[in-house]
Length: 321
Ligand SMILES: NC(=O)c1ccc[n+]([C@@H]2O[C@H](COP(=O)([O-])OP(=O)(O)OC[C@H]3O[C@@H](n4cnc5c(N)ncnc54)[C@H](OP(=O)(O)O)[C@@H]3O)[C@@H](O)[C@H]2O)c1
Image 1 (cartoon, rainbow, N blue to C red):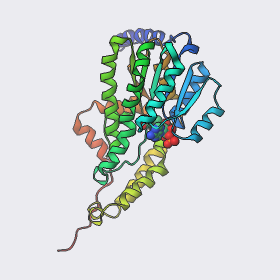
Image 2: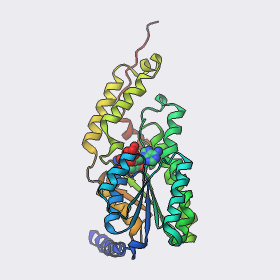
Image 3: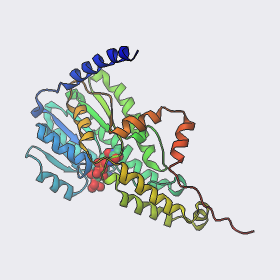
């Protein structure tokens, strides 16, 4: 039985490997627009695609990010200030890209910009916390995509959306998972709608990688700030030890489990942009492939049991009657 399975799976893997090796020709004629290039995956991808010979248009949130990126890139790479929450900034960038690419159109946009804070128990957060993060992680993705879609149709190019394993399951509260589920949904409808135009749409779903998004100190400080602004009655519901236990949990989980090899994600992004036959989804990282993805297919009660083990126990203060 085992040999039959190997006999069927092995040729399929070889065929897939062979098919996925092929890359598009004429990279020097192709323009790739990437958002969030100051740091992390976006920064590394911009430099990597530049090295491969693509014309990279890098959206940076800060001037410092633009200056740093230019130091490590060729003269071909163009940087531009971009705030994905500001429609004027997004339109300006699209107009700049239109003049740059001319009749060739835009080969690819990589929607990478994102934020992950504040995150915490759902009842510690306000609607404004949700709106602010959705503005970057979800509305930013939609706005940027729509702003350049006519140029991508012209090139019969690609849209690459960076979601997360937390677009598959929601083990913690706050707007991050909500925003990434939204990205997955936008990605799927766009993929179906754009197929007729020859535009390919791919979704990247990374696990835990060591970047600013998973910086433990930033996460711990953000959690402390959320706790500090809670009314005393709510602090009493959770109990005095809850914050410390949560902070310790973050320390154990994130310092240990984050992968420092960002090329695992950047390699997937590069494949989505430059392979002749890109995949529709990329699970980047061992934790994504062997934990988060399988868990996302499990019955709700199993998922809940697993995820609740990562939430400290409540230690409420019961007021004397
Ligand atoms: N790291 C992980 O484990 C992980 C896992 C799954 C998914 N992701 C996703 O991967 C993407 C890249 O994140 P990363 O891990 O590389 O973290 P990162 O280093 O913080 O990169 C995010 C980038 O987005 C930029 N940005 C923030 N707000 C922006 C705005 N309003 N407009 C334009 N750009 C903005 C940031 O600029 P500043 O640095 O100047 O703020 C930064 O360059 C995000 O979508 C994230 O959700 C990350």
